[in-house]
Length: 69
Image (cartoon, rainbow, N blue to C red; front, side, top):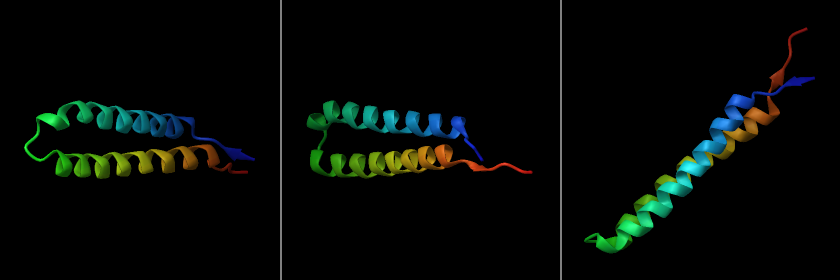
């Protein structure tokens, strides 16, 4: 039987929500930027990396690790 790590999965979910909130917040700020295209490319990359890390954390947390004994 595997022991699930729910804290890791919850933090992963929070990271995904934070990435989406950051992206949505920056959408409002982009029109006021000097170069909105470059800004959104950078924001998209950062949000994508944080979201991907969140997905990995959820998967690892749900899979868990083998119990000793």
